[in-house]
Image (cartoon, rainbow, N blue to C red; front, side, top):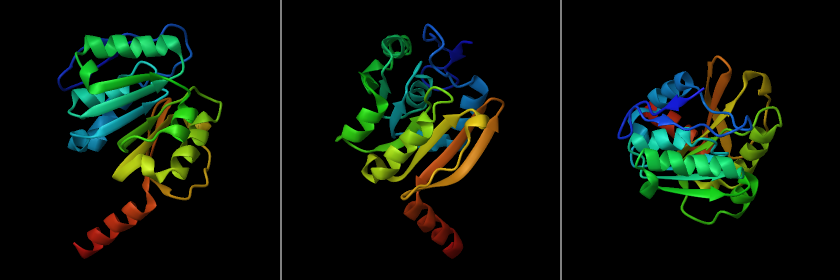
Length: 197
């Protein structure tokens, strides 16, 4: 299954896939739906694409006007694929590709916070919930009004006890479920503003 850039600067570019079956690429249908939900918000943002795979989500974000994307994957083939896809889309100067364990990265990262953290680990290993808990324990990773989006198979869905993050939306597109989280205080402020407005 190949993936393409849906819109923006790199529209129509067909992305290389990672050799083997260790990665879980997002379907074009789910990716298109995801980016239509977040809309223009993605412009001028900083994106972290964890368990980067082909880099499809971060590259789509850059194509649509994100300022910067940081890709993290431990798989050498995935790192090479992301680098090749960034070059193909002429977006390499807006990105950093790091070969690292995503959990070690979350524990040790000291740089600027992100507006969008996208989490799409290999299926059925409960890695998504472990990653979410790491992000929850480090609220400084996320800018104010930032979002964490987890991509799982619907059968992987399970409750996760969170301290700082709160789920605010979820969408299902066939075998892809996207769950949206934000800082609970930010969500409460937005609700207050809506009530006052």
